[in-house]
Image (cartoon, rainbow over all chains, first blue to last red; front, side):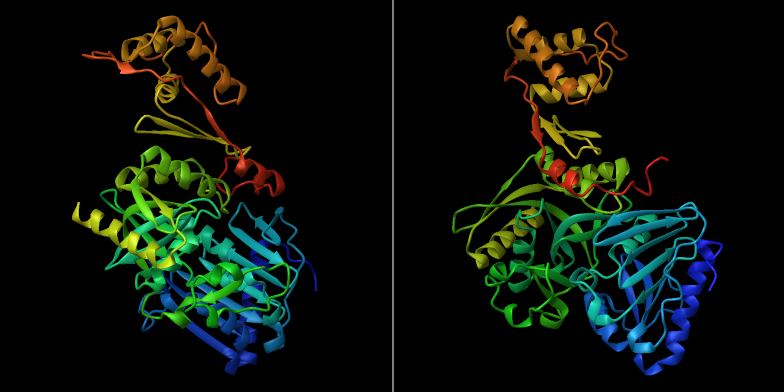
Length: 359
Length: 125
């Protein structure tokens, strides 16, 4: 097979292959309509085991029925082993392609960045930013990494969201009656601990490491859930006994965390969006009890900005910093001193909420 | 890239991943410099706002600016006049003075050194 002349023809080859896969193995196909950060996403997966590994992370975003309008984003994925449809080509088009190692694979961009992709040894996914479509091949569902299972298509979705003016932040988000507390901080600060403690105590959960941030008219901010999954170290998971039986273990090294699909455990507690009414910066302490205290806007930005600006892909750039500063400026900010008593963390967050709502 | 929030400067070097903060007197100095106020006029602001010996304020200002320059956060020509006027300070009483400090955080810088990010889609080419 000759090398494609353009990235567009390569993309079209993938699209045709995904269609061929669906035609060859119709009983292996699953289709869902998702409400993702205010957009309608249609996802079709050819390969039952692939669907079982990918779709649970989006289960909480499933729409009760497909909307009448065209999707804002179409995603078509197929499993070669399940459908007998091979990857059409793994070579790159002869138009200039930029390739850079990102997340156990490579990020690719071609045709003035109209086409962006991410490839690993066992998977290749491409996003056409003009047509708002993702196509992707997987050699076999069992080869998916924990990252691909927990945060499917993360890099390409991040770009699509960014194109729509929605910024990904490194934060957790929990809510009560549609009002959300954004929990921001570096890795290890306690975002997952706080988010899961609140989930187990009855809060609505929208995420513990990536949240899509949208600035609304009037300056308020809305947080959108992306994934209903969490990664937790085995020792940390012991703090949440209700979650332990649901942990997916036995993933190949170097994964040292367990994967949780939280919609399987608390289907009524996973929310898709919340209006952000406060920001908390968690900090672990050696105490048993948790406490919160108002913090300065500068300190709140100091805790939130570094990982959200430097560690995420794609990086938000100066506009992203403006947005984070606007968020910090708009809502009350707190430091959350986390104690070892997990239930106490949720109690503390509840008191924080009560203060914010009363104020 | 920097923001000043309630007088605290939060500064990020997107290339190295090192980030900084400075509040109080440091925040005032940073904000003045970003607004194009000269060192001389910045010193005037400090002397008007804070209960501080002018010589000490001047020494601290030059030390602090030296730190900013050594971290490549600013580049100053000492002879450059102000491009904007410092705010007129009319205070009944002066604030207590605390030496400006530049807090430096290199945890992200270490991470980026191990795993440099791809040039961003949205960076200017």
